[in-house]
Length: 187
Image 1 (cartoon, rainbow, N blue to C red):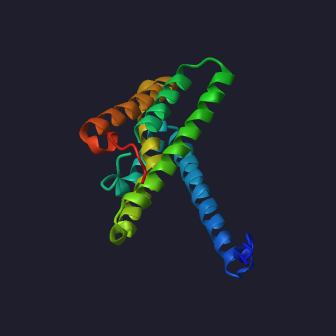
Image 2 (image 1 turned 60 degrees about the vertical axis):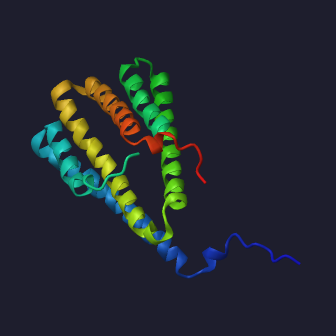
Image 3 (image 1 turned 135 degrees about the vertical axis):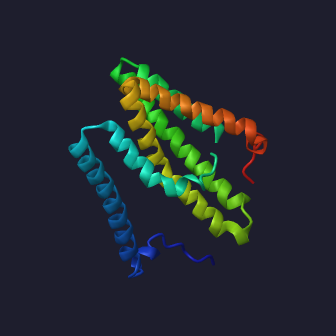
């Protein structure tokens, strides 16, 4: 007779709720801190470039270890941002934002899957950390680029520029790292 699966067994572990609570507190605290820092810098300077420089300062520790990244999803992400910047329709803009979220989620899942399936077991910890560095720096690098571009080009042009940079990174990566371009299976 097969043992019955209990989907709530982890909830009965007295340490599990503490673990979940600590993760929620950590995430909430990190988001609050980022918002407060950005708000304070902007309140003091009234300069979008300063916000970008804060993002760069937060990302600098991560930049040197960043990994390259999944062509179709990332290219779609960049293209959607360009179309979003050019859109004059609320509903089209909303759909484009939904698509950017979807393709970003897909690229995260593919990267995570590749990481666990393609990394030798003895290197998985180190490779996972480099992946975390990439994930941790991406928003800050984007903040830096957006702040600089908004200051120099204006809001709409800076969003277009960000999308073009994304497409450029995809193209250069596909050109310089052919094994990633030829990867067609996750096993």
